[in-house]
Image (tube, rainbow, N blue to C red; front, side, top):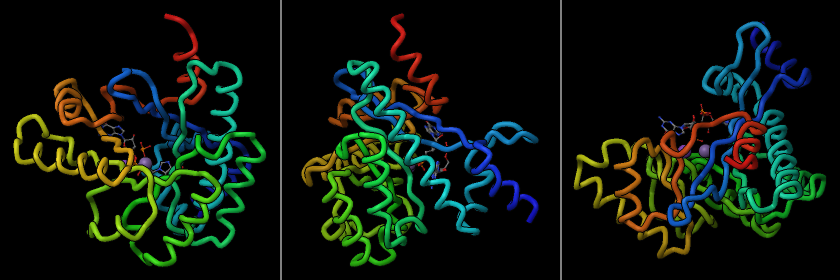
Length: 256
Ligand code: G
Ligand code: G
Ligand code: MN
Ligand code: NA
């Protein structure tokens, strides 16, 4: 309970931090987008990773406030970047949404508010949901996501290929981006069967008109294989780790 109260206050005291991890366009070798990842600058314990507080936040419903803060901050950051340095600004920022957030009846209003309040164009915002969350109730999810897409916002399936997925939902749920889970990338160079599988998923995504992003790319060999497979977007420690948003901004806007 003490931890719960401290987390509750953290939001109001401004202890949350926006970190960004770059997504690279393989062909251009340039940053195409960025994923927003929350951190908690806990005055007692230092910088906390999401694993140490997101589960509690989900149990207590505080995740709604956290997601909302990250959403607003992400829109504000990218808009600022576009205004200050349009040539280096990523084309999109993607924000993770929890299951509880998808269930909010006024989710679409929140997103519209964040866009209107910051001036960010809707097509520069991607909302990430895991397939497990999307599949709980396909009819409800589809309706909710279509509302968001009508705003012009894009929808990504996060951790694609994990959980107990059924490819059938790709037919019914309106999505724009497929984020291939990093478990498919780990061990890729030494496993030809896995390479066939990943190559087939990339083709499938492209055939359906989706943008495919490979997550968890940790070395050049993995990157080379994904490039050969025609995968166009990559994210992972090999390309760039999550870092404070202003730090990524400084790094990309300051000439080497
Ligand atoms: O940031 P890390 O690199 O440790 O993220 C760990 C997990 O926490 C990931 O599954 C990620 O989706 C989740 N996560 C990170 N930031 C947010 C956020 O702002 N909102 C939600 N709901 N989940 C997040
Ligand atoms: O679950 P989601 O994809 O939203 O969260 C991304 C998580 O993956 C974050 O915790 C982020 O720090 C982590 N991550 C990003 N790139 C890599 C990578 O190359 N390797 C590993 N092991 N984790 C990564
Ligand atoms: Mn994600
Ligand atoms: Na993921």
